[in-house]
Length: 306
Image 1: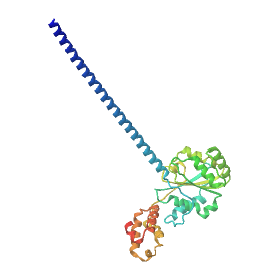
Image 2: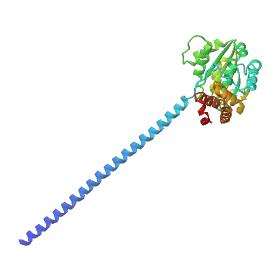
Image 3: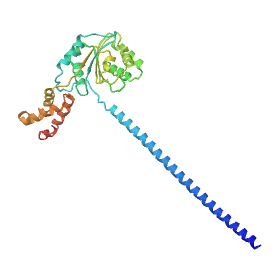
Image 4: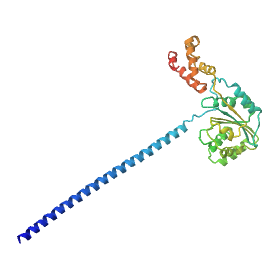
C-alpha cells in the first residue's frame, strides 16, 4: 500500500514537471511568436516608410522637372530699346531672304532658322527682323509666337497665330475650328510668323501646323537651340549665331553704365568694366545681366563684380 502511494506520488510529480515544462515551452513559443510578429510589423512599417519616401522623392523630382519646364521665360516682339551689337551681317542675311528669297516649299511655307547656344541673342535678332520697317511693309500679316511647350503644342501655337492676326478672342481648343479660321484669314495674304524658342519637334506635328498655310504666302523665322529642328522644317537657310567679341560685350556694358558720370572720366572704372566684359564669354545675355548689376551697384563696388 505504501509503495503504491509512493509510486502514485512520483507519477504525480512527474506529470506536474511535464506540465510545467510544457507550459514553459508554450510560453516561450508565445513569446517568440509575439516577438516575431512585432519584428514583422516593424519591418512592414519601415518598408512602408521607405516606399512612401521613395514616392515622395519621385514626386519631388517630378515637381522640380515641371518647375524647370515652367521656368522657360516668355518673350515678346516689342523692342526693349537697347542697342544691338555684332549682328549686322546676320540681320542683313536673314532680311534678304525675308524680302527676296524663296516664297514657299510644297506650296505652303518657307522657313529660315536662327540657331545657337542659350543667351547668344537669337530672340533679339528675330525681334529686330520682326520690327524692321521694310519687313512691316512687305507683309500683310505678322505673328509672334513664343513656344512655351516642350513638345510643340500645335493647338496652342495655332491659336496664338490666329490671335495675332485677328481682333476677336479665339479661346477654342478645337484644332479643326482653329485651323479653318486661320486658313480663311491667311487666304491670299503674305504672312510672317516668328516661332521663338522651339525646343523640340517631330514631323507629324510640323506637318499638322502647316496645313492652314496652303493658298497663302507664309514665311517663318524659327529660333532654336536644337539643331535637329531646322531639318524637320526643311529650312532653306540656317543662320548660326556666333559669340560676340569682347569689344561688342564691352559696348553693351557701357550702354548700361554710361549714366554713371564718374565712369566717363575715371580710367580705373573703365578698366574694371573692360575686365568684366571678358567675363561675358561672348554672350549678350551675360553682358545684359552684368550690366544690370553694374547699374544697380555703386561704382565703388564694381571691382568686386569683376
